[in-house]
Structure formats: structure tokens, C-alpha cells
Length: 77
Image (cartoon, rainbow, N blue to C red; front, side):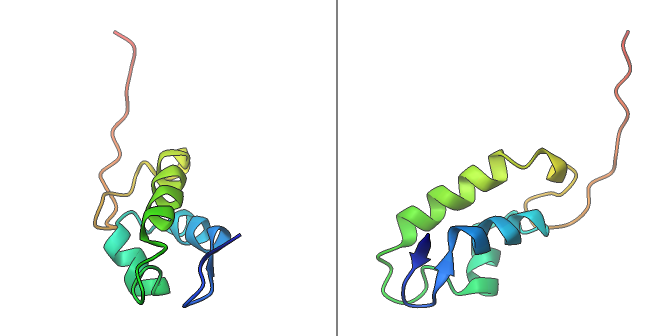
């Protein structure tokens, strides 16, 4: 579905950016220009972004600024 009509950004585009490492909504806006013109899609774009971030367990090694985190091993005690 198209989320941002002004810049033709879809929910797939948002999810694809999250999968590639975008973990900050401001960075998503810089990359896609979503919710940066009229603002009507901001709430929907944010909901799609938040759902993509929370549903992307493969990216838990990326912090909010898009920088790799140190990997730590968890062992049973």
C-alpha cells in the first residue's frame, strides 16, 4: 500500500529500509522523504515503521542510530 502519496513511498519501502538497517524514523525520512511534504501520512508512516522495527528480530544488533552494537553471548547459568 502507498503510505506517502506525495513521495510515493509504500509500506514495502519502509520495511525494506528497516531490513537494511534504518532504525530511526528521522533517518527513514531522510532516505525516503516519507511524511516530509504535507504531513498527512506521518501517523501511518510511523505506525508502519514502528511495526517493522519491532517485527524485525534480525536487526537487534543495530542501535537507534544505525550503528552496529557489540554482540554479547548469553549463556545459561
